[in-house]
Image (tube, rainbow, N blue to C red; front, side, top):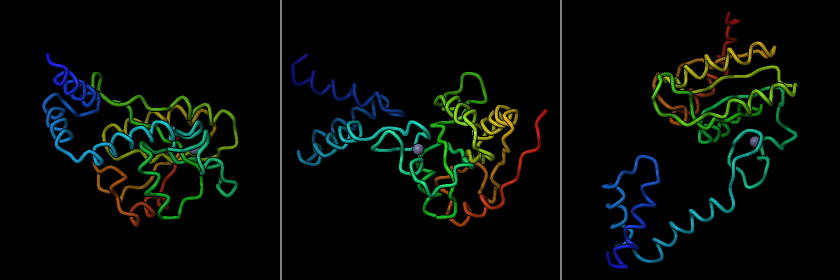
Length: 203
Ligand SMILES: [Zn+2]
């Protein structure tokens, strides 16, 4: 293998580390990058470096932040007795845009796989339980996606949280089943938050 071929293959291997990118897609992307204007390609590289150097997940809620604790967790204006549980940081931004919700968040960074062998990211559930055990939270609103994984996660969380003496509610679904919350429009989201129902005690 020539040195040039080695450099090119190295890029392909690195791109294959991304989710959903197989060898064929990685090759296509690598050729695209090779053909790009130099400054445009370098911008992509720099954007990746900036994200890794400057951003991290909030130590408390997993929101994306430049600090150890995100602006929402650090704000004295938020209602700290309420935690809204969502799967991805992108959903937080949709909900924040509505301006309707004043409590705190907990972002799972994924959902539970309901079937053995199905692939999902390990959600940050233990951190949530640790937060609740510290006290002060009276309601957890579960707003995982209305998908099989989201529902499985909601049931699992309810079983875990109710014994801690915290009220668990699930947002109402005017939102179409199967759709990710980040794609729901703001009006539907506000309605589903307002129409949330307490989940009856699971035996
Ligand atoms: Zn936070």
